[in-house]
Image (tube, rainbow, N blue to C red; front, side, top):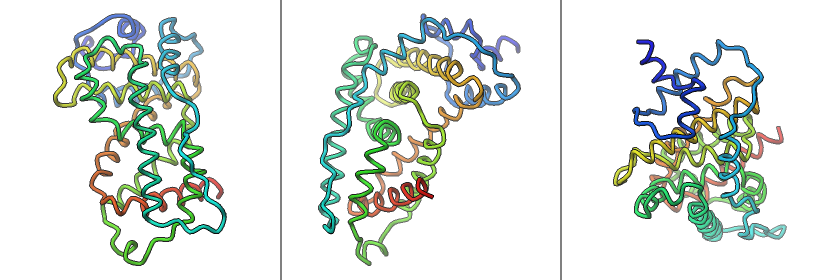
Length: 284
């Protein structure tokens, strides 16, 4: 029983060191690890410690792969201009194109790029690109999305037909996005944490059609432990920060999955409602 608890908990220094450096074949599930960790972490007083030597370069490599430059898609509208539904939809498409291009470029810069096949990368990207874009919009590009883009959506006035035809799927996505925005705003995710979260979410061995799931599992574990190590080192007085961050990933996956059910013509109204609510919560 004791060995099983160590296997499922997995948060001892020895296991963490092994995952960062070597491959292991034990089964890995996200939520059992997370709940086990969350239940125990609250019982332990924060202890000052140093960062594991292996963690720092791994985190730096992930951050280096990111394009942290501001989005280049123009989002400035002159005062008094009324944005139409078609114009706003076109802007959202251009933003999505730029964000997707950045994700493709990101893959080629990953430190483990040579460890997986192009087929597996294609499969991973086709299954996670919405999640990656959503995560980036809530973190590294949030100032532009909830600033510049929100200013554009404020100049768009939906028709009565659009308001009356807004779907229940759209309402649920809106509510979940607003909740997630507030959660991210509260946590103030660092670039290092974002880079780790993104890699962990991308390296999803449960996606169908993958050929090398065991390697994906080991890579996922590696960055899981790296993220935990970095977060505990950087925020020793926030013992629940790591599980809170990790719990955002299932929510992002859920929202991305539901977003595809929202009719395209409702996206301008959805973004207007979400950005207006989120921006208002910042100023209140």
